[in-house]
Amino acid sequence: MSIATVLAGLDAIRSDLEVFYRDLHAHPELGHQEKRTSTRVAERLRACGYDVYDQIGGTGVVGVLANGDGPGVLFRADMDALPIKEQTGLPYASTATDSDGHPIMHACGHDTHVTALLGAARLMSRTKDAWKGTHIALFQPAEEPGDGARSMIADGLTDRIPKPDVCLAQHVLPYPAGQVLTRSGPALSAADNYRITVYGRSAHGSSPDRGIDPVVMASMLVVRLQTVVSREVSPLTPVVLTVGSIHSGANPNNIPETAEIQLNVRTYQEEVRQRVKDSIARIAHAECAASGAPKPPDIDHFGAFPPTINDEDTTRRVATSFSAFFGERARELDLQTASEDFSEIPKAFGVPFTYWGFGGIDPDRYAKAAEKGTIATDIPTNHNATFAPVIQPTLDTGVQAAVVSALAHLGDGAEGPAA
Image (cartoon, rainbow, N blue to C red; front, top):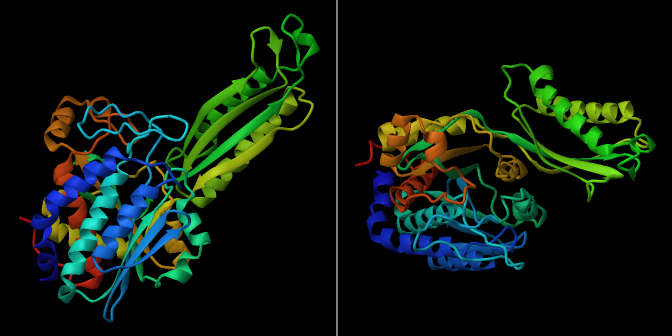
């Protein structure tokens, strides 16, 4: 069976993958700055016999391994890190900084994604007699800022590599290591950021009647925006609206000219997404009018992520293969309020896709937290300064999932549970 044939080589490369992972974790790079990472990725792909296309969208890398007639499978891994100071205490913890001296770390596990896909590519290249088709390993920059996929597409991605028949991706999550978790249909939310600037009239703090206070205006807007979720959307429809920033003025004895708030919205349905957007604009204009603002608010929509809606047939095919290989470790993924730009890639090619999660938390630690009911406080999430997947079985599972999902399309894709 092709899965057993391909994965038979995992024991021989495990140590090397772990060394590579530790090095990658210790040398994180922010979005669009992944020069060291992309160089190392390209070197490894070439060593495996892949045709390599690099510097796509800046630092994007794609490896293509054509192996006879058959379907094409594109598997994506994201490469970028976050501007967070690592507090894991690991011997391979990051001490890296950006160009301004601010600390950075792989707080979202993209280093596991890169390592797992390189491991899968290495195994696929060594066992070409076990599968047919084209394996495409895509390493994407700048997932965190949300424009990495679009930058690769804008740089001619769809014209530079073969068109795949399906696209796949995975993400390490705060679940027990060894688990793989799939979900059909909506899996990750859309995300929309808004910057709203409201205008007043400045005055001395002792004469508020001579001014129009944008601080009060913005404060009322923050409160009123909470009613979008509680009063304008069905309680059965998941929506998150968070005001994450409010800023105005520079001293306590002056009414300033302007105030600015920034908010983030998470939705799963395009109709709801538009309805919330319209409500935000309506409320902002109404609050400004109610306060006698000298001009309407400025509303800047920026940093948008699309929803991740997994294709049902593709997800079913991958989930069936996972169940056969991983047994009880194959689970259903909870609906996630995080967001991704991966779906831009299959959308550009016009092909179906599925995206799943795999666990990165020590299973014993997770079980103890679950027993105490303290998962929310004891298990760090992605983007936390203490988030660090256990190396094993996280990497093994990531490699296995990348191989099994690819072979669900390129090989027989069905075997019994893993030993």
